[in-house]
Length: 294
Image 1 (tube, one colour):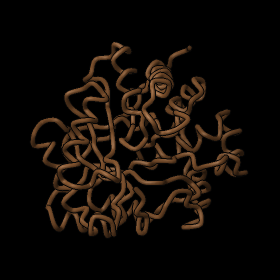
Image 2: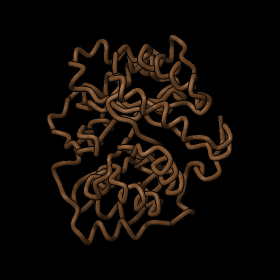
Image 3: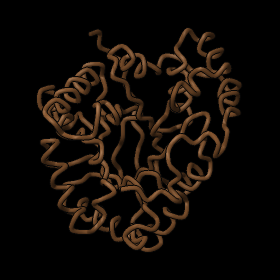
Image 4: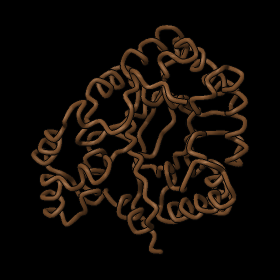
């Protein structure tokens, strides 16, 4: 497989660390979310392709069932640990303080590492656990003090969720990862996240089921730059300062997705893509204000 030599820029986080602006997502790289031997093999192979393509930022989660496969891939890649950026997320069933610690220990074991670069609360779960995601947040920040976690962050947190954990703990997340793509600009979440000096990280950065990649505007801009629609959308994220986490099981697409630093979108092109926002109608995933799934 041809590897890329394109350097991936890093974004400075509020705690003094940095995060690569493009990462490789591992959601749904397996047929299901179980950690069977076959699934570990699939994830290890896929992540191995991503590492050879040049990705150093790997995004996994306890609920994906991919941590063990990621661990195997990085163990065999012979890439120094300091050159990797590893993110995982707390499963919704592990929000109790004791479960947070137990599951974090298990995450480190699955990945085969002694520290994690970034650990996120996957969902705020506004009514489960008595609506107490604040205690969960405090438990995660303890790992930073212990030296086993470089940075603590959140995922799918809306403005009120962010404000609450900051007001009640004084600990500000360094990253907020949430759904963000041209059809769903998630303006309120972006604005609140940035007002607190928190980095914006996009999951589902390319949308879903071909949208917005088949959009006429994006196709036209892609043709003008001799790039794919996915490359144009990822470039849109980059120029807006987002961290983006694309995923693909196809090695060539992994390479294409990472090669978005050799062209620029004009102000007019950025504005045209911005105008594709459909508001709440563009949302693909659950609404964090009401989602309480385990």
